[in-house]
Length: 258
Length: 381
View (cartoon, chains in turn yellow, brown):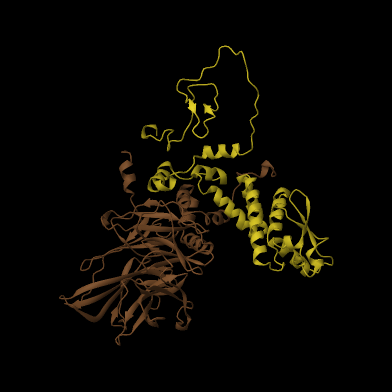
């Protein structure tokens, strides 16, 4: 690690602050990171003014609105941000750092459930953590931008106070804005399925009587992408399966099905 | 993964937090979410939100789209409009056809996500429409008569569209010049339409010039600009400030070539064009300061594999090293390498004119553009 990225005053860069969460967990955080939480910064500065003898290391700053799990994530995000007291890197180093940060951010979002985003935003708002707010707000906006109205209501816990005919009027007038939006059920399913599942080969069962027959209407033949695979790739028993769909979009896209 | 189930979802989210999330959404989503609840509808419809959303888009350079108008020499009445999303890293998405309000128009000018369309034939009354293509709303301007000095006069109008920051208003200007037979009279009529007040107003001041050369004005910093000829045959740039309704004259940076004005990178751009020879681009880096005219590049033979002519500059690339320009289709001109390269995109029409657009909720209270294909497919109730 090069010397230039170290603060010329080593004692202040390694100064730590203690934060206490709503579930009574204590976090020791570097001052540089904790200062990004403006609420903490304000508290710290107020403490300084009120003439407290020992700084930072013995004062415990209470955060009654923030859960430890949320704080962990916000601190880890805060650490990845460019430090305000660091000496400016040359252009190449800056680009590399930017790419690293982007990769970290993508990884972070991949593992987050959308509901957790709301908690992070709430906490970042309470802590007045500007960079965190910016990032998580954008992440949540990206998540809901192609979602249906029903999904958004459920997500934010909003009650629909429109009369059916009022809502219908909006949907007709702005029909184009409702095109290509995934049904909220599918959204929920996708979220549920996002948890990794692995299929293991259980084995081949022999001697089952009567032998199961593939229905006459099921597709057979070569898989269009890989002709080594024969259709049907995966089957389960059952014929007259009842499936649900929302009124606006029928299963076949034909007018007769809506 | 981490957070206990007691902290999940259904707790009430304060509107202030929701506001900040909504600001970051594309306009299609915002329109859809109008019917989430009455509170959301009131928020999204509010003029404050429109303003903030537009500022946020401009600051973060997001929600950008190009509007293309097909120029089809054979069938002008059937030329189509398309919208093309344009991302932060200078990539173009797929062109999607969109429907213009009412009938066939030319693009007059554009600003902040509003496109002003004009239908004008000499000696006929013009039709002007201000359109927000991304939310499919428009407002047609009311007819405004031209006060001709004498009934024997013919008039010819030139138009402009732009933003007036001191009044937070969008304005259309019409300057009518008059002919007695072939002779140009020394009298102009200037009228301005305000989108806020939805009416025309006459400007009583007279233009300090002999003749206007530009076909349409270029708007920047709350002022309209034209290339004009003054009484002593001197060609200059005339600026008309919308807020204080004053005229000002600027010196051109060049005297050679056909003079053309445009806006590039937020600055007034002057081009001197000599067909098949060169196209010289200058920017007025400090608005109002004539000494700040700076040449940014000059396109010369060999730089582009087609005839050098007037190419409209549209915008800078993210790193500022290239300029997107329009020549029948689009091309990027690399300033350092002095080379132009066509933008290849299968979904673009062959020949078109371009407007740049930012997703905004301006004109949300306007009239809806009827999508003709949707109208056909609509079920009878």
